[in-house]
Image (cartoon, rainbow, N blue to C red):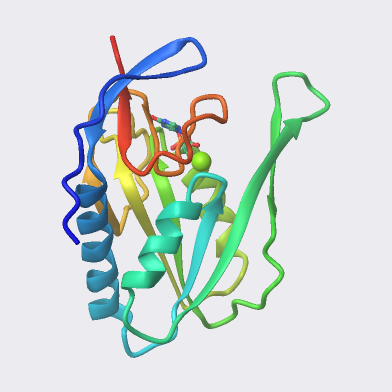
Length: 185
Ligand code: IMP
Ligand code: MG
């Protein structure tokens, strides 16, 4: 059956409008490429793919379908809450209840912006005595990135503008969109 997708237009989430930016096909192509590259690099091991919730749930699901080899999957979440000092955010890693000693761990992110989140995650995984720790992200905003941490696998580089869809939200809305939209200016 042939389905010709209709070009989707402007959408509204809460008080903002968004325009179509990256199609479902382009996203799928980028994810398939990352899966193939990672398989080339670690195909003879059994990597543990660790998705960062909430945003990465859709990337991880599609990534797993493209990855052709033995692998495991797990999810973590960074919970942030206000510390004693009102400006100090305390970040905690939740969901990691598996022994990762000696394993190849590939963190899967939906998007890396300033790099703050990934920096925190890397610190936490360092303490797990993993054999390899690699970072894969579907989207990357090079102009916003402020860290020196090497990003091992990058799907699509995008300009420093807010996007939604494919797991990414604007105040929790938009995660279910199968393609990506950019904030209309
Ligand atoms: P970082 O810590 O600045 O790298 O930001 C990472 C997190 O910020 C992501 O996991 C997203 O939750 C959120 N984020 C950054 N840029 C965007 C965007 O354009 N749209 C939606 N969420 C974003
Ligand atoms: Mg996120």
